[in-house]
Length: 208
Image 1 (cartoon, rainbow, N blue to C red):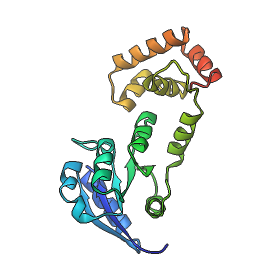
Image 2: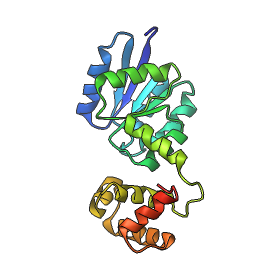
Image 3: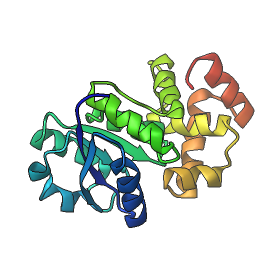
């Protein structure tokens, strides 16, 4: 690796913030310029920080990581935003990338993976964790004429992975009744009456 990288970390968990700063900061050529627990706090100083890469969590209090991306790009068009999160919702991933995120890796990534991703994104790459990359590829392979909404598609995919309704509600941060409503709509749109038939029809028509 050649050159250097100025990094700003935006992570609402103070312990994680300090951990990332310590792990990344020991890498030769990488300087952690600053760390913030919210985008509102970071917004006051990032222009002065002049980071090459911002490592940012999606689930931030106040302005979310996804909402913050275009605000960063407007202030610092040359700065890359690398999302670091436990949140692996396909809808959120695609929204983050559409808003201008340069990469998307999960918090269970090794410190070396995070460091490698910082160099990669600095050099114009688009690093992604394996699961995230798989989701993105799958989204492009789907039938674009699907009768299902993005949320319905996401829920049906989770059902196909064996997740219970309560687990889906917890993973997507929505009410259980909302999940049940989505499932009723899925069955109605696909003209099916069971989980197994819905999965069969969806896979046959490349809806998931």
